[in-house]
Structure formats: C-alpha cells, structure tokens
Amino acid sequence: MQDIGFLYNVQHDCPLAKCTASGKQPLIQERVESDLFKTYIEHKPIERFVINTHAFHNAHRLRVALERSLVAPILLYPLEVRKAKHTEIAHRLRATQKSKLEARAAQKKKGAITPADKTGSVIPKKRTRSEMETETNDTEMATQA
Image 1 (cartoon, helix red, strand yellow):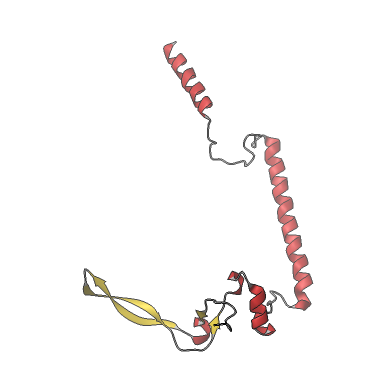
Image 2 (cartoon, helix red, strand yellow):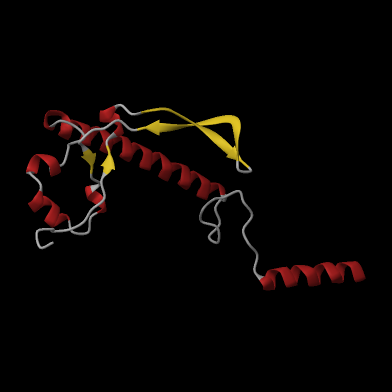
C-alpha cells in the first residue's frame, strides 16, 4: 500500500477499440421480457484507458508519475500558424465587439434602453409591490369616479 501515490478513475477508450452499439437486450415490462429490444455498447478488450487529467486536484503527482509525452498539452494550432490564427481571431472579436457597441449606442440614442432596463430586453420588467399598489389605487379611483 505504500507504493500507491493516489487513486484515480480511468475510462475505456471506445474510439480506439472501435466499440459499437451492437448488443441487444430484451426490455422487461412488469417482470416479463417483451418483444422490444434495446441496444447497448459492447466493449472490445483493449489495454488502453483515458484519464481525465483536468479533474485531478493533485496534477503535480500525476506529472511526476507519468512520462511527459502522456501529459504534454496538445496545441490547437501548429506553431507555424498559431500567431496568425491568434491575430485572425482577435480581429474577428474586435469587429464583433465594435458592431455590438455601435448597435447599443444606436439603441440608446433612440431611447429604447432606459437606465432602469440596461439590457434592452423586450420582456417586461418586474414591478415592485409599491408600483403595483399605486396602479391598483389609481384603477380603483378611476372606477369610483
């Protein structure tokens, strides 16, 4: 037991093993097998597992226990195009942000956004109890007159 550094959960690597939903199992209704079947995944034996390293609170121990190639981060884009991709995405985000700011300024100019409702939502805002009581009192006075 002294050799165990930590416990972890592993998952079967279905894509690599090419597991398929080929199993069929009869459905049981009121303790009797019916004519209906449900499929289930039949796992093929493979000695390879997936470890969700992001779920660990003690990742430093994992990095010590495993070789670097198993825990090295995988880049989303190759190093040759990484800077260009970053610049491209940044330009798109700036354009999106600029158009949103312009649309919001136009809405504000039209008066569609009031200070109380900064979202510009078409959903009516909640009224406070005092506002509802004032409305009720105004309606009662109007019906009495």
